[in-house]
Length: 227
Picture 1 (cartoon, rainbow, N blue to C red):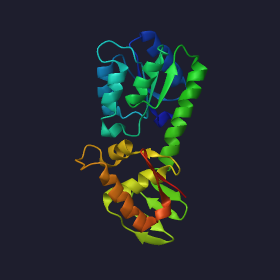
Picture 2: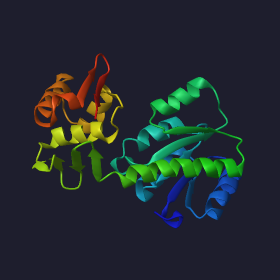
Picture 3: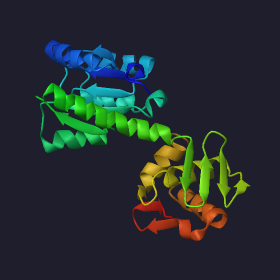
């Protein structure tokens, strides 16, 4: 993806920040969209689906934390990276930001060149995820997300939707432990779920089809995919 195609939403109630940061991002070649309050930011984000949102925390009305929470409820923004840009460096503020669904945290003041480097690093993460979003290859398994198809040892298998999505999630980051609550949120979302045992049942079925050694239970935490 070229820079001119990347949309960045910059949200801050300080005009100077919008002007200075916006100028530097535009000069770098990015599309820059601005908003000066949380409520407008949510509306703009839903309409424009930016790749990156740089969001101030302290704003009148709807602050950045609440705005981030609202944005994370919008399906179109599932892949959007959200980072906070704020003068508040307190631990509790950072924790609140991450709990609200933020991906990163930048403390201002920050030099324009440093900010640009940070933005490039964040967008690199987006491109890396984008590049691997359709085809996942782990060991002898190939997962085609576009066709909902799994191939193991050149043998194709069609899994029920939830089993496929669970496998796709765990295999997207081999070795990473996915917490049970995160699995429920990403695979089942707002759908009605009987309980945590739902995950266990689907894992058992995947073990039967993919291989018992591919899935490791981390007691009291969740599951991970191993190669």
